[in-house]
Image (tube, rainbow, N blue to C red; front, top):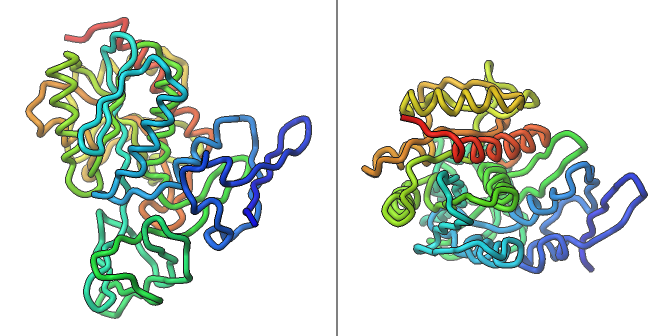
Length: 348
């Protein structure tokens, strides 16, 4: 029996299966053991929310992005018929028209490698709590959890796969009319926004990059190709930032003025000017630490300017990240406005 998803709209209810939502790309959505809730109610003010659920159904801890790259190639072929797709390992460069701007959206997530003696080695920087559910990549949950030892080490509590197996959080997505809670909204939210922009903008490039949580190699490879082959020198980082004392969920997309790296000021000022003229509400973020694909682009040696644009989330890298759905739509709208604005205007 398939778990079912109840959709509500102004005309009533219709019911579809998780398998239909995932377009048959993930068996996890057809397994009721994977979903702790038997039904979730979606507000269809944004009818494309099903796309976000499809992305959340696919596992891709850093180094194991093949399944999500395959899915993206298929989805883009089915939905953006005039797009050109190039694949480099599991990173993708997608372009439409004559792009002047590229979005960077990393397709990897945090996760765990099973070590010897049931130890769990972090992939990226997951933030764990004892009792968090985890499962092997590509498999439904069997009830395994994380145990945090007094030494701070993590061990698997449950039936273990072979050492070297990769694990991810097993929690199911939940949401109401305003927010969504799920592991790996970082960066499924950014991928969602990039796909929406790919559909809405007739001249755009998107780099779907690997390894952001662990190495950054995907962004460096894509930056070289984008500059060398397409002549692109402007980039926007489509990623998720953190809810803080100064950057709040529910108050719009954030544009980062800096993190541990700094974008070129003249380009940043240009982006902020377009953002202000767009009329879309946004927040200005200032951080002293952290990073994104922007830092990897900067260190790649390619002369590509970049600015980070992303919705904030609470509880990052945990099994239950939280994001405002209006912030996600604000992020999508802002990225589209910036792509169109940067195409029309040049910066010195």
